[in-house]
Length: 259
Ligand code: 6GU
Image 1 (spheres, rainbow, N blue to C red):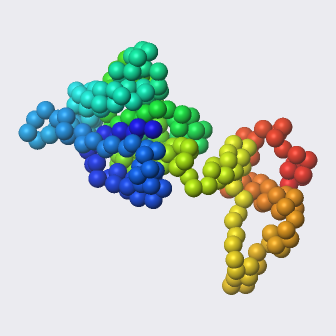
Image 2 (image 1 turned 90 degrees about the vertical axis):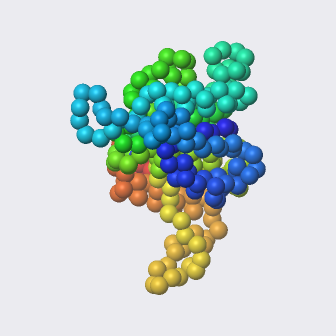
């Protein structure tokens, strides 16, 4: 997957050199490129924002600067499926998604990550201040590009960079070959069942007066699975009653209902 990030703080994205994502980049599974929006500014001061039309607090990022930046980044990916030069339509046979992190977006969930992991390229436009001029997403959507304005939750960050890192990590770990143990992704997809994961324990079995549940030492895999599921339901009910209400009753067995 090709991922381009445009930001006025490109160094913010340096953490993506580390850990799992860094390894996936070295292995060529992810082609991540970070761009400085100010490279497309027009003046000596490299201005990228202006006061809001209609007045009000804060600054809004200029559509002309963003337009030139995104046109250049899209053209640079011409060889990528989904790039503008790929035969088969405005953006070719592949799937390119313009992702705009914003607290005013739709909420990014595991389902969103699974969906976006199917794209050939992501272009992530990180806004600061009060956001990017709203004509920018409208313009690219009208050009036939899939535009997703996404929020990572109901709180406000100073800019899209931290949210972009969250979303890129959630998407990238779903790409084939990125995770050491693909079973962890499969097990999580049970969270598609709509429960939090069961608690995890390791050795020592007794620690500071706290004993691990005996069942985990029983070797009885059916009993272990049952105990874990009961525990997952109990903690989901305690921590995320909204998830319990949203459960599909047909996915529950009689013992679940008793729990
Ligand atoms: Cl995507 N951006 C900003 N600035 N704040 C947020 C967010 C995004 N998601 C939650 N809060």
